[in-house]
Image (cartoon, rainbow, N blue to C red; front, side, top):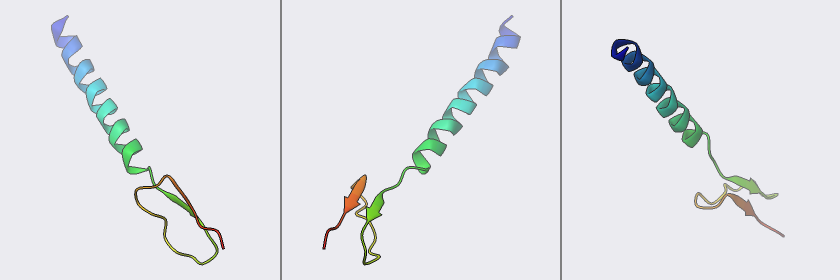
Length: 50
């Protein structure tokens, strides 16, 4: 029973780690403006009004 559980738990742990790192890598900031400047890295949403 232990021999069947170990590979399954290792696979599950590796899949969970991959999913979490992929989700973290896809987060980014959004900038809404008319001059084409980049969004502030620390903001989730950066809005510039004229």
